[in-house]
Amino acid sequence: MFLKNNLGKGDIGRNDPCFCGSGKKYKKCCLIKMEKGQINQPSRVINRSRSFILGMVNACRLTRRTLEFLTPYVKVGVSTEKLNQLAHDFMVKHKAYPATLGYQGYPKSICTSVNEVICHGIPSERELVNGDIINIDVSCQLDGYYGDASVNLGVGEISANAKKLIEVTKECLNLGIKAVKGNSFIGNIGYAIENHAHKHGFSVVEEFVGHGIGRNFHEDPQVPHFGRQGGGVEILPGMIFTIEPMINQGNKELRILKDGWTAITADKKLSAQVEHTILVTNDGVRILTDEADDDPIF
Ligand code: MF3
Ligand code: CO
Image 1 (tube, protein in one colour):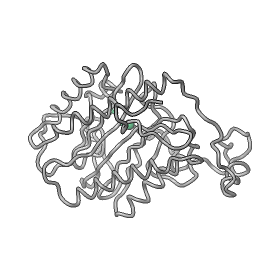
Image 2 (cartoon, rainbow, N blue to C red):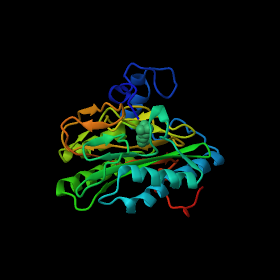
Image 3 (cartoon, protein in one colour):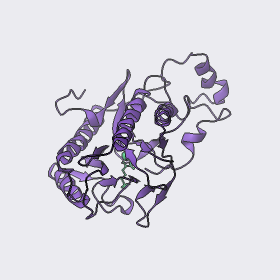
Image 4 (cartoon, rainbow, N blue to C red):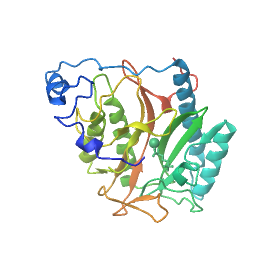
């Protein structure tokens, strides 16, 4: 989703009220505790009912299954509109609604972002050709709950550079997920991602962020893919959000096409993205869009 403000970058200011609700300034409260290593426990937990968890698990597993269903169709000669139709029919057949369809006027049931397209590529009659890389982003609404995930695939034989970009992007997502653990902050996620991308000479798109998700497609918190450790809001058990880094081969600048959606790299170099929806637990995370249908639900 679009970054609404500068949250990720500015983070919580030293003089802002502390996020823990103490009423003290951040610098006189949790910042000191953090610097002294005194915070080991999250300040609170978000309670989720069993029916809420069940709803999210089902929506996210169907999202994963939709992506798995689509993957074998991603071949030379298939149009992105064909992928859109396949995904649409699959979701509807499983009693889900494609969350993107009609979302703020978005016209299709998935996003297909090819090569220099960063995100929100609109499926069209354009056929995939050998060497393309494509991000397929699927968002399902099932029984009122949302799941959101995306994969990045190569079409036919792709260049070594393209392969590398996709690999590093997946590593960025995994490192971002790893940064979500007890006593962590949203800024730690972006820090881990940015660090890794830069290490490989790639850049991180800042205008689009991960997001809380639940009974709404997009909720707080915003999850920037850049940041600093200890910045942003505290990560609490019970939070559910996406991490969806967009990593560019060249620089991080983007342009939006006249359709109002398609974001492309300003330098027309490749961009890759992968996304998961995760649930923060008391002792770690569950990657809801990576769970198998027969994994335990509770
Ligand atoms: N995963 C993307 C997001 O959270 C999906 C965008 S859907 C669109 O922003 F409708 F906004 F294109
Ligand atoms: Co998303």
